[in-house]
Amino acid sequence: MQTQIKQLNPVIAQSSLQTRRYHEPSVSIVYAYWSRTIDIFFGICGTFVVLLVLPLLALAIFLDSPGPIFYSQERLGKQGRLFRIYKFRSMKPSNSGHVMWAQAGDSRVTRVGRILRPTHMDELPQVWNILRGDMSMIGPRPELPAFSQELERSIPGYNHRIVVKPGLTGLAQVSHTYGDTTEDERIKLNYDLQYIQNRSIALDIKIIFKTVSEVMFGHGR
Image (cartoon, one colour):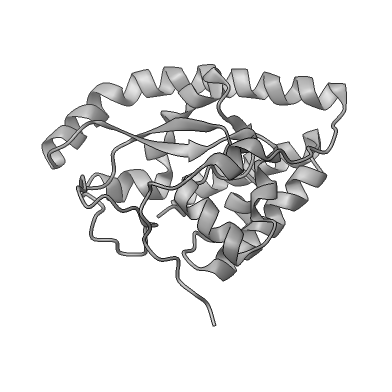
């Protein structure tokens, strides 16, 4: 039976994640340069796109619902380092103090959000995280600390995915549907670990092309 991830209080102890280090499989010098090159390339190109669409999106988000234009949230980076991720706000602001995954037909999604989320345009500001070095273009999805702690209890070894930087896209993101169950996370973890163990230029190119397809056909939530 699949168990839906419950909503969690985001205030948790992070010492275990921040002090424990996981071993990162080695990669070739050529791949290391390739990875950093595409991070810089897509980071710069993405920044130009953000600046281009910002006036229109900012106005649409402002008129659609009260609240900030951008949304930021603490996520887990490489080796458990915390950083703030940035997105265009696609949901109504909440003062509940709890966090939970988005679900199909989620009532929190705004009218503008129903356009931004399927096309992943809400994630465009994450190119700033890439340029800052918090994230890479390709890697495991950056997870909420509270969810990561809960999933590590349900799926032993879950936090081995943080041996690399999280990514704007990744093998798990393009290979499995957006889910909110522990079984979904178990499947995506297998994809994440497969990517970490088999990182290559060819695999990255395949993921980039699949990402373009995902964006074009609006498979986000």
